[in-house]
Structure formats: C-alpha cells, structure tokens
Image 1 (cartoon, helix red, strand yellow):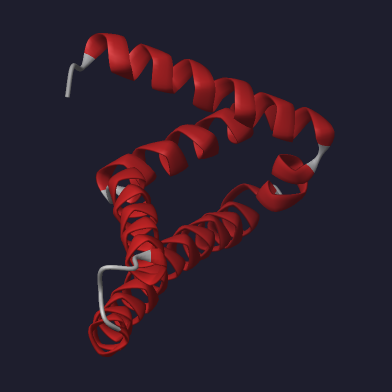
Image 2: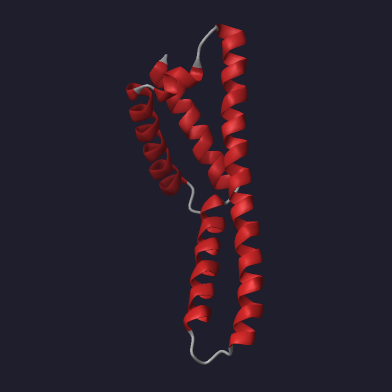
Length: 124
C-alpha cells in the first residue's frame, strides 16, 4: 500500500507542478535576479537609474517568489486534504507512508519515471 500511495501522490504532484508551470516561473525568477545583479554591477548605468531599476526588480522578485510560495503551499494543502480524506475513507495515514524511507524512494522513482514517460509520450 505504501508503494502505491507514494507513487500516485508523486505523479499527481508532478502533474500539478507541470500544469501550474512552476518550472517556467522559477526560470523567470532566476532570470530577473540575474538581470538585477547585472544592473547593480554595471558601470555604465548611473546610481539614480540603478535605484529605480532595482526597486522595480525587487518588486518583481518579491511578487514572483510569493507566487511560487503560494503554489507550493497549495500543493502541501492538497496532500494534507488527500491525507485527511484517506484517513476517513480507508483509515490510512498517507503522510506517514510517504515520509517513510520506502515511501520517499518510491515517490522519487515514480516521479522520475513519470516525467521520462510523459516527455516521450507528450511532446509539449
């Protein structure tokens, strides 16, 4: 039961992460951070313009970080609701099974296999 629950949960989480485009959001956050650091190190841009640009970049970075944190919190809440549902329905503690060494290994393997199969089957 541990292997099955861990695998299904990992696949659902991976699919939610893909559907919510968390990878592209993370890349855009890193890109914005790199752009801000380039502006900060530039000798060609005056300090006044650096202040204005960095204020805007800081706002963008905070907003993007907040969106990523919100997505991750929603995923944790989804797993928590699934755990509560399974406890009521079939008296199984999902979180305990996922956090066990077998559950973590299974979830990691299932997520990796799912990503490889998804990439081969569905060329996005």
